[in-house]
Image 1 (cartoon, rainbow, N blue to C red):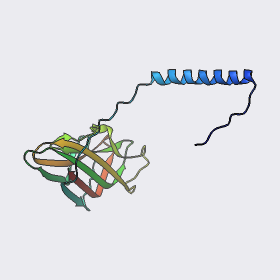
Image 2: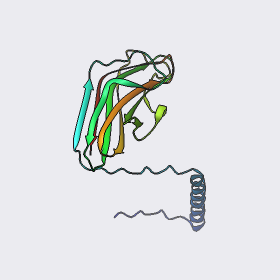
Image 3: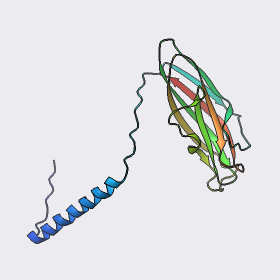
Image 4: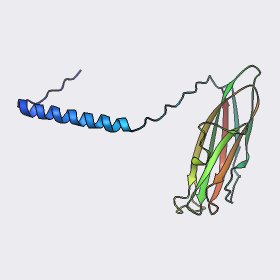
Length: 183
């Protein structure tokens, strides 16, 4: 363990230094006390992977904007949970994308049995952006989203949906992979 040697200071300077540090600490604690604490995320604990479903497509493209969420063609996976068991379904979607036109952004969400998986963000999750209108149809990038939901026994459907935030905005997706893990 290292020790820190303090320079020798006259007593009155040392007292001023201690007083200044106390004021900084008091000010900092009063400022910090006014900031609301972020809610703690509740951890989800799941077991080992029991089943893996992979869906990929190298030709799916969406060229028109859509203000309401719509199913991404082909981006659907079916997975079964055995009777008497619960499972965590972890769904991951990756894709090459181009979000362009207007000044909006492009959304992607993952539904499990028609319900958005956690964290639920709705239209607040930007999968890609027009960069305030600077992106073009040639601005290809790779993006990803990952979501989770605990489900009971039975057949479950995992579906990727997309939307844009402005009518002038278009989203193109291709070379995508949807991976669903059941634990």
